[in-house]
Length: 98
Image (cartoon, rainbow, N blue to C red; front, side, top):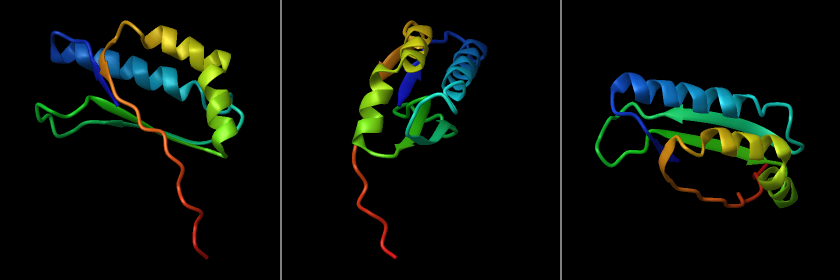
């Protein structure tokens, strides 16, 4: 989850659009990345983050590989100056029940 820079609503929208483009560019590039979704806050409440990235990986090894993949590192560099706060939670989901 991120809060992004932007003195005006237009500047904030531009940062959100850049973040979306950057992460969308990872589709098909990262081995083991099964799902990638970018959600934009619609509540506009003061304690909400601006955007959230939800992703699913085949396994922990795929997530570990994503962390150091050159394309992911490129995206991190592209977005580094845009964020004012970042929060992250990595977790393993229990296996699906039949």
